[in-house]
Amino acid sequence: MVLGSFKCKTHWRLHGKEARDFFTRAANFSYNSKKSLRKIFKRQSVKKMNMSWDNVVVGVVGLGYVGLPLAVRMSKFFKTIGADVNQQKINSLVHGIDYTGDVGDAILHDAIESGNIQFTNRAELLKGANFIIAAVPTPVSKAKVPDLSPILSAAKTIGENLQKGTTVVLESTVFPGVTQEIFGPAISKYSSLQMGVDFFLGYSPERVNPGDKEHTIDKIVKVVSGQDEKTLSLVAEVYSKIISAGIHRASCIKVAEAAKVIENTQRDLNIALVNEFARIFRLEGIDVADVLAAAATKWNFLNFTPGLVGGHCLPEDPYYLTHRAREKGYNPSIILAGRYVNDTIAEDIEKIILQGLNTRGKAASASKLLIMGLTFKENVNDCRHSGAKDVIDRLREWNVILDGYDPQLTEETILKEFRVQPLDLNKPCHKYDGIVLISPHKEILKFNLKTLASQCADKPVLFDLKRSYSAIDAQNAGFLYLHL
Ligand SMILES: NC(=O)c1ccc[n+]([C@@H]2O[C@H](COP(=O)([O-])OP(=O)(O)OC[C@H]3O[C@@H](n4cnc5c(N)ncnc54)[C@H](O)[C@@H]3O)[C@@H](O)[C@H]2O)c1
Image (tube, rainbow, N blue to C red):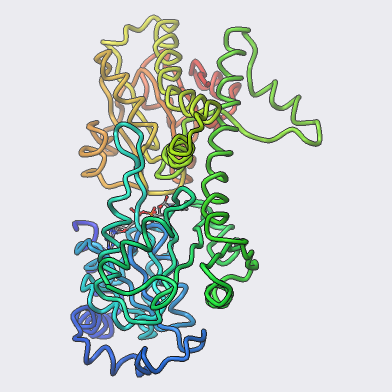
């Protein structure tokens, strides 16, 4: 909210009366009654609807990293109601503030100005939608078992506000079977409507790559599915309005669910394989990057690099598939082995840093390190399952003094999420014994090695996870250069 009110003030300064009017309208808009909503949308009643794409009113349930860009994009073509249980998020959105960083305040502002989108935490407004998309989280429990409670709570919200004839599409990543065996029946229970008769189910996974400004939502082929031919056609037509890359019609809902979960499982496993290569070649005393560069000259060698696997998807999605496999009586071994390797990479990083400090004649407990780039990957503000957290926790056990720097996060978040002291940019020199660069955001890469070295004590180490700096340049700047 601190950031929110700052941005809000900036808008006020920038746009004066226009902005004041805009925000007043936006705030009121959120609390519109069903009656005024009807007036604004000037649409037919759902009952009268001949359910074709040109009279679709879209409802998006869950306005996070997936749901928000989707809702904003949908609003270019359809009247759209964006619903979320998180009041703080709704407050930000009605003030034109994009907390995901993926949409951008200007585009969000334009969407609100168009009058085509409404953000709300009032579930009953979903009664005005006839095409509802759920994009809620799909976490796993501590025991790595799928936690379907957000899916079930979304089903309750939708079910309690469902009009006959509505199509409901799930976008969350799930295991094959969730849409028709769990999500649909729950909607049916809360609506007392019959699946496939009174409402219709579809599944269309989101395949967006966080922080990737090139492969935006419209430029990724959309996999769609439906419980029957008519639903499939409608789902395909609605999405074809917002996607320029093309639509892939999966043969059934389970196929579409399975396709998404294996995309992420395959990536997770490929990274696990190169992480294992890195372990083996460290023992061999050769650099894995040199080995990969040589091997990559073969046309069919796949290009993956070792690293931490974080975020909301890769560390969790494979468990959805392994859970389902076990339910069906198959014990998956390869997928879980890959997960284990990727879950233990922070341990490798800890050892490499401690050895590096030792080589430089520095005791861990007397050392002070700056951890830079704390989010789960570069150029995003998402710190869910960030590997930096694991590295920090491990170093803390050695009583290393830790500061943190991440221009994508507020100081408050750095303190709360990572329990490290945010870097004091006003201090002339911090005398760090080393720098650990995890997620090289573009703002971080503006610091050259000389600047980084100027913040360090004698004989510092630089652990560079993504090899953003050249080893020779780092050595010339006085660092002992460390990597996976
Ligand atoms: N983040 C990504 O890049 C990405 C990419 C592809 C797929 N996915 C998948 O998409 C799904 C959503 O991921 P996300 O990153 O957008 O999650 P998120 O946590 O950013 O957003 C989910 C939103 O849903 C809201 N929510 C939860 N329960 C709700 C309910 N019952 N009613 C209304 N709102 C509710 C939350 O408040 C939150 O704002 C997950 O299954 C994820 O695996 C994510």
